[in-house]
Length: 513
Image (cartoon, rainbow, N blue to C red; front, side):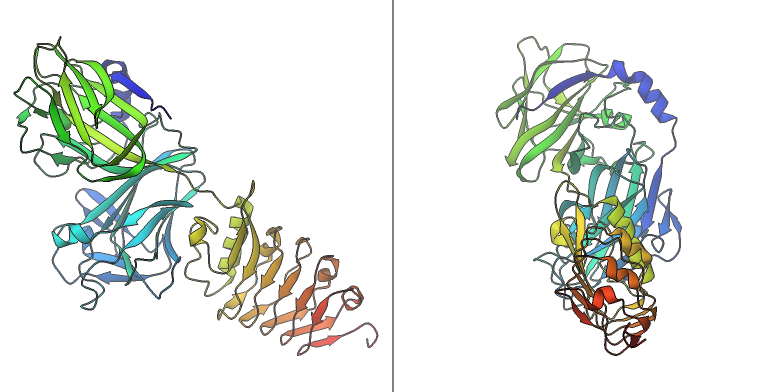
């Protein structure tokens, strides 16, 4: 694939910037593990109890510089590979959401687990990244991860999940969600892709991270300096940049005093072999001509960029990179001064995962509500990513991703069986035996593909559901050891090939009625 490279001059966007700056920050900030709300760094953080129903809130016993790090929500590690724990929050369908997670271990798992666990994080049905905070934690730093995703429905989920490297309880300190303006990163096809932040830097800057209110969308801009290249203050007032970076990143600049190329090891981390969205921001602090050629690992990225005091953004939507990256800015023969740069962003382009059929999700949510103690991993997308499907749920992946089996045998379930189960019309097998479910058995006649129904050894009451006789493909019907009454339909008693078990109930047959 040939990456798309585009240059945008800042003047063309001055109107959109002035409109965007008048908007309020649309955001949800969640202090994970906290039971009360609080204002931290000028932002109101909510307790997380309205967004998740599993896990244990805990307080760190060590001092922290940021109050959002003082509490965590912890999730049990029980050698339960493929188990996920999800926050679910309201979203704006079709809008771009900046999602940021923050992690600071603080020894929360005790002396037997001195190092932070390694685990996965997910957004809806998409694998987002591995969470490995070890290096940051050794330095006493928190770790944060950021991505950009478009909401496909009225809610979104952010999950942590047990992977093969996990060796102790999972945790999370904070979850931030911010609605981004329509113009940001809009060259990305968000129907197919999401963006995972690799680096976002203000070049030549040496202070704390820039964020809201300097950045109207509360993006983090980390300082970046390189010892062999001097940093300088910049005196260029700019506005209207593509992607709307904060004006403060143009207060500093990296530039060389030499006449030759300027080479930056950026981003600092080694990259996996993938495609990347890259945006570079420039503004000339000189009245003299500054014309440069930009290359990445020796491959021309953009040629003959004439930097002006108005500034420019150069970005690529999908640029292939792997390993270490060297960004080279070379002066062209028409340039009167050395190269310089103000800011940069780089994201890994993620292929979005699938989503479970909406009707099936609604039906499973109804079933979950009818259980008094649903499985702890029943949140987020039921089927995706496939390695993180819900316990007891088997899915068929195709043009419509449907639930085909439900197996919660011997799960210690209490509560009732929701009538919403009838909307799982692709079900072929239901195993709910050996639990403590009570109430009546709902009408299942719409489950025309059903072949197996196991409800034995529960506490179901009420009339025998005669509608079961209308399911033509039924091959196993186990209802023994409940408290059912009434008459077994003759259509079931005489059905060829049906294994019917009803002992342990107060039932009659047509011949003995």
